[in-house]
Each structure stands twice: as structure tokens, then as C-alpha cells.
Image (cartoon, rainbow, N blue to C red; front, side, top):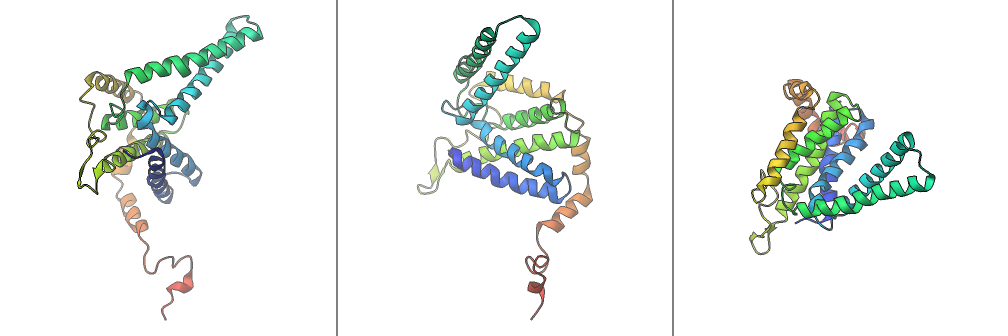
Length: 248
């Protein structure tokens, strides 16, 4: 399989190209490009959350633990009369519970190259991001869908890279890991696939209006604009250096 650096670079290249196209086609303002790139790169690391030695996973649970600690402290401030020392111990306990206990439970219940390496997971995380962006960040429906799609793009790029690295070019054969990334669901763990499928269906009920996607898919002018902007006309960079386009 591809390593962490390869996944990060691959997701950055694909997401960067997609973000550039989105800005060039006026789908989003240029100020949104860094966020779209970041979401694509994050999506490119998400499939490895089920790896025991996953750096992104441990970072994610550290952040979740910190969020849980802050929530517990602020909740206690409004509901309970606790001393500063007690508040500190409460926050510390919440952090340790998420960072170590919940993390270990998650690692115990999941298997690397399992359900998180599947096309179902691509759909699930795409919908989760779109729904979260719309309801939690209060993004417009069109922007929320783009946020979700960029996470999906990065996620799918990760799976494709894993499959490409499963091909042994020197030995002209396939490695044992071939076919474990680009699979519809995890057939070896149907229970996990069913759970993720139910989560995906639940997310489908909380999505923003998909009219944006339908409208863009049917926009003939958008497709024509994309084709016109894809390749330069005449001499390369003629608009940047006009002298280069003068025929001698």
C-alpha cells in the first residue's frame, strides 16, 4: 500500500487541481480554495483511521478528547458548583476517556483495510461532511456540497493509490493487498458494512438541498466553459507574455 507521504501528496495534487477548476469556473470564490484543498487532503488521510499506528487517527482522538474536556468543564460551570481543582480533574478525565479508552475500543472493533477502505465509506464521509458543513458550520447548500465532495475526492484518491501500489510492476503480478481498497463494501465484516450503511442512510435524511448538484450537472454552459478553460489556445502562456505569441 502507499505510505503516509504518498497519500498526502496524491490527495494534495488531485484536490489542488479540483480546487483550481472550481475557482476558474466560478463555483466558489478564490478565498475558499485553501479550505477545499485542506478538506481534500484530510479526505486523503481518512481511510487509514482504522490502522493501529495511524497518526491522523491519534491526532483526531486527541482533538476529540480536548473538545470533550472543554465541553465537560463548561457544562459543569453552568450546572455544578465545583472548585477549580475539581473542574481540572473533570476535564482531564474526559480527555483521557476519549483519547485512550474510546480510541482503544475503536481499534479493537475495526480492522485495517476493512470497511473504511470501501466505496461505501467514500459515500458515507462525503455525506457526513456535507451534512456537518450545512448544519454545524451553517454553510450555504452549494458550499456544503462542495465541502463534502472534496473530502470524497481525497478519500477516493487514497483508495486508488492503495490499489495502484498493490500492483507489483517488477514481478509483473499482484500483491496480496490487491482488491482490498476499491471494494463496494467490506464483505469480510458484513456487520461493520451494515452499520456504516445505516449511518449513510441516516445522513441522507439530513443533507442540504441537492438542487445545486442537479443544476450543475445539467448546466451545458458550465461544461463548455470547462472544456474551453482546460487547454490553452494558440501558443502556451500567450496571455501572460504577449510577445511570445507574435509570429516571426
